[in-house]
Image (cartoon, rainbow, N blue to C red; front, side, top):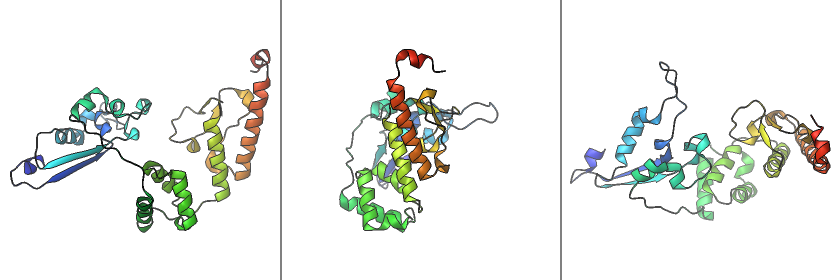
Length: 245
C-alpha cells in the first residue's frame, strides 16, 4: 500500500484505524501454545504493518485514528486522554499529532444511524423502532456515539420492560452507593449486570445476586433490603460494628 501510494501517479489512500492505542498495549489475551505465555503485541504481524503505515514517509495518503479505552490493558483504563492511552512510545509515533474534535450526534445524524442499525438488523426490538422508542434511546444516549452503540446492543431483542427497569434501578443504586463491591469469585466482569456481586461488609445485607436470573420483584426486594441494611449499618456505633463478624 505504501509502495503504491508513494509513486508520483499512485492512487490516494485513506488509512482509518479504530483503537490505535492497542498497537502499544502492554499485552494481549492470546497465549503461546509452545511457551505457555501471553503473546505480546510486538509479536503480531498486523501490529508491525500498522506501525509502519503510521510513519509519515509516504505520499498521496492520510491517516485517521481513534482511541478506544477498551483497547487498553484492563489495569490501564484509569484515564481516557490520548497521552495516557497511547503511552510515551505511542504518542511519539503519532507525531505530528493533530487532534480532531468529535461532537455528539446531531438529531439528523442520530436518526440516520438508527435507520442504519434497523436496516442491517442490528436493532431488532420493534419497540425501539417506534417514535417513542427512538426518543428514549436518544435521551438515554444523550446523542453520544459510544453510549448509543451500547444502548442499541441492549435493544437487539424484545425484553421484559419491567425487568429492565428494575435491573437499571439496581445497577444505578450500585453505582451510586458507598457500599464497597467486589466480584464474589474474583472474576473480571465487563459490566455490573454480568457479575456475581457481594459486599466486603456482611452487615450491609446485600445478598449474592445473579442478575440474569432474577425477577423484577426480586430485584426490587434486593434494592429495598440493601438500602435498609445500609441505613441500619450507618446508625451503628463503631464499637457495635466491630462486633460484627
